Length: 187
Image (cartoon, rainbow, N blue to C red; front, side):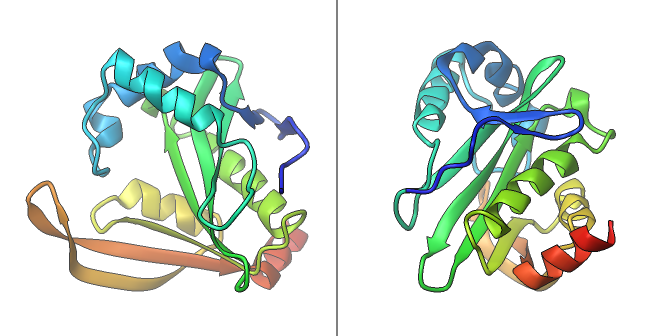
């Protein structure tokens, strides 16, 4: 089992496991149409968010391939989002990065700071070789975040999946451990 030493602290944030007490903060962004705009989900009811929080609360460690490590991103204002790593392959040492943030906290680099802290753990303590991330082809804010993290765009899959009844493009980004270490050493 692989679990970060909690909490993970950055200059402005605390990353920690999700708890049932986070329901109000998580529901505040999961219910917003602008948050789920590029996701395959619809805005959630409070009960759906309660189930989501309960599921995320159990994602506090990576025990086997396919597991998801989901961390609450807490700032002075409370939980402003989540970051996650999905363990894709033990043999290839790969994972996939994901994130969701309340839009009221955008534009200050908080999502970048939180995702970078999780990548530091993934490449450092967990020993990943490669991390990828994906987004809808028109989700420019997510693509910009991946670029700020030093991820390179590796693919643009044209009309590759059904999204709300229409074929949609998907962008795929990735970063390798040695690239991450070079980037963070230069900073």
